[in-house]
Length: 136
Picture 1 (cartoon, rainbow, N blue to C red):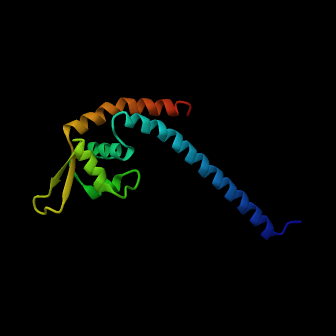
Picture 2: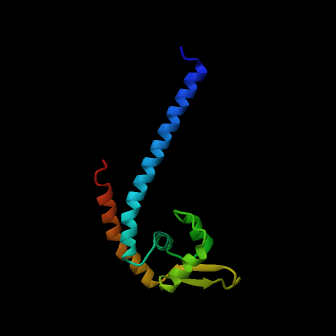
Picture 3: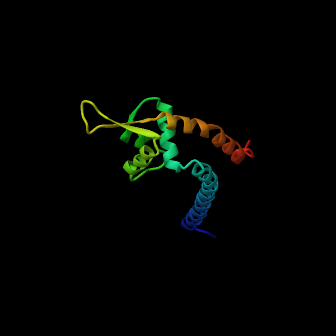
């Protein structure tokens, strides 16, 4: 007959195995969904974090400070400055220096950036529908 301690250890091992299986299943699902999303964005010359920035700026409808955008990002971006450099280079975002304090940097969508996000709305939604259509 199992002792209470042995029973608890057996139970803990089953939970650990289940937790690992759930984690791996979620990770694989995430990767599968993300792959198609990355392909869609790549066709527009965007990375996933760049698209995220554009959506954040569009949603607020006003300039934000760089740190405010970073706080709203879906993924942590260690080099947010370079991310914005690329968006500025593509003329999708513009930087605005603070009038009172030039160290403060605001960012906003350019008309080109706003148009690109708008163009992506339908293809992104179609991809989500396709990927998730089997769910009730």
